[in-house]
Image 1 (tube, helix red, strand yellow):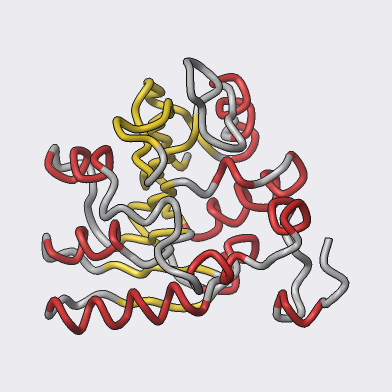
Image 2 (spheres, rainbow, N blue to C red):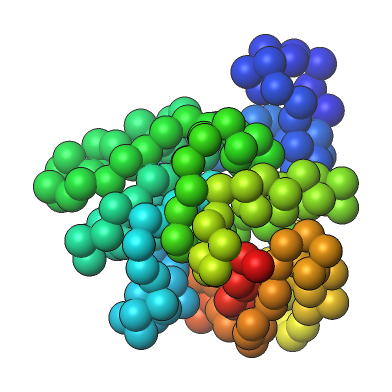
Length: 213
């Protein structure tokens, strides 16, 4: 792990950052990040099916492509990410496209600090980057910003199939994290694909629809 704590803005680095020794922001400072491929087809499909409604939070939004797609549909959306460079890119993209989308630098492990609630929450490629203890903290934070009856969509790398992405998780891990005791009900969990710059047809993934109860 890096011995330069200032790299992480005074916060405790996540398990992924400890593994790489670099903050998330570094992923955006030398060209597009591996996952920076436009809105994820799975999220576009969910939106087309009417699954995204009300005020929307995109947790770990990166350069904001999913949030910008939501904004293009006329929905109010806030995208948050700990990477300042990514948020700056997202804000400029919103201006360039004439879209009304809000972006803020915020820690996904401290979502309660937003002091806001949302009817729909998107997690595209964030959940799988956390380890067990971080997941508990993250899931609790998600619960604090999701209205009761609200819907969370989690798109993450799956451990099922060839050519899996980094930090793959199992269906059992997903269900265990979003348990009734944590304030959630996993309504649907199905195989999907996550598109990256290294997976031409997408890497194996899970798409979960999870209700806040």
